[in-house]
Amino acid sequence: MTLVVLRLFHRLMRDKRMSTHIALTARAFGAKQLFYTGSHDSSLEESIGRITEDWGGNFHIDHKENELSFIKKWKQEGGIIVHLTMFGIELGDKIVELKQKLNKNLLVIVGGTKVPSAIYHLADYNIAIGHQPHSEVAALAVFLDRLTAGKTRKEKLSNANVEIIPMEKGKSTKQKNKE
Ligand code: SAM
Image 1 (cartoon, helix red, strand yellow):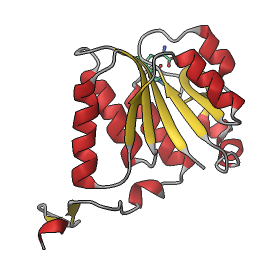
Image 2 (image 1 turned 90 degrees about the horizontal axis):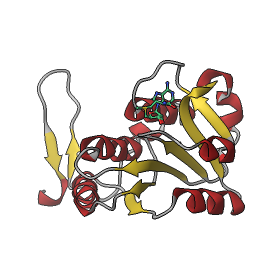
Image 3 (image 1 turned 120 degrees about the horizontal axis):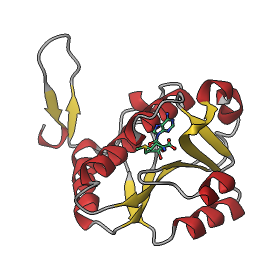
Image 4 (image 1 turned 180 degrees about the vertical axis):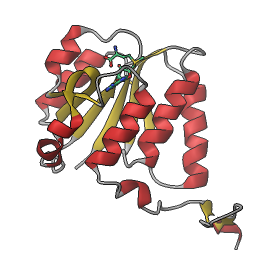
């Protein structure tokens, strides 16, 4: 199974913070890769690269020119597409079915500006995290956490330079390469 995320229509400057948070959330909750369309942004890619270098794992971020051809190819190759939208079916009503797809390659799409209707039709599942508008970051975090039952966010990532030592109060880290 591969779990990856597609962020639609990234805009330079305006979406930098939101797209960074989407990437961090995807990575922290178990996705292996973030694809994004819209403007190519090397500073976004570099900042996520630095996080992965410090905090571990093999997370990748890649720009795609055309979301529709990327989504169609994913489908042709047998992958499943989940589009997160407040207009979809509430996650709780589909979670059992979605968990049965975890043996397949799963592409989770989050929007930004207006999402074209073609994406609603290409998606195998249009899933709502409640039917109120909130945020792509919140929707992604809840979706990935429910889908993986919280397991992926607890995994230790390989090759980390730094690791947190959890504590009730205060904060502490371990520099793994400096021991
Ligand atoms: N019109 C939007 C929609 O279809 O959900 C809200 C736009 S919101 C600024 C940007 C993105 O956040 C959406 O494209 C969707 O991926 C995600 N999002 C926001 N609220 C959501 C919700 N309640 N359920 C699922 N996804 C949501």
